[in-house]
Length: 85
Image 1 (cartoon, rainbow, N blue to C red):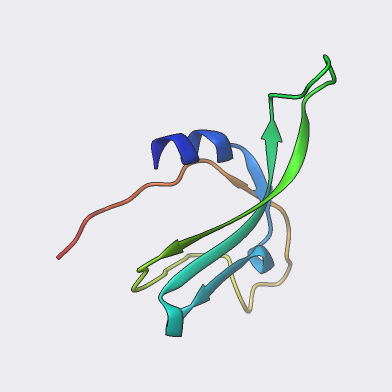
Image 2 (cartoon, rainbow, N blue to C red):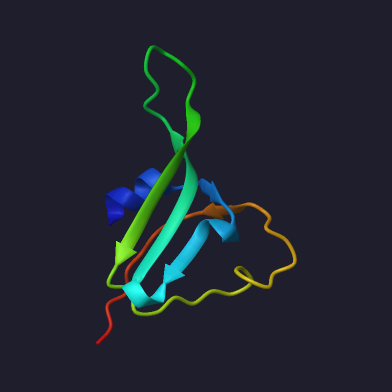
């Protein structure tokens, strides 16, 4: 998870790019991550990236998601896991 988090650090996304599929216990996101590994000396650029997490039992958020006034860009800082019972 640390490697995935590092590759997605500073990715840009919107609340509408996040989805929790409760019936499938899956959390899905689409983000525009910064790709430092550009070939042929080309400058780094953002690339569209999609991913999902399975066995997700619950998702909570504050200040983002359905019902917010705008779908302004968000910056992803890190992805972490907190084990529970």
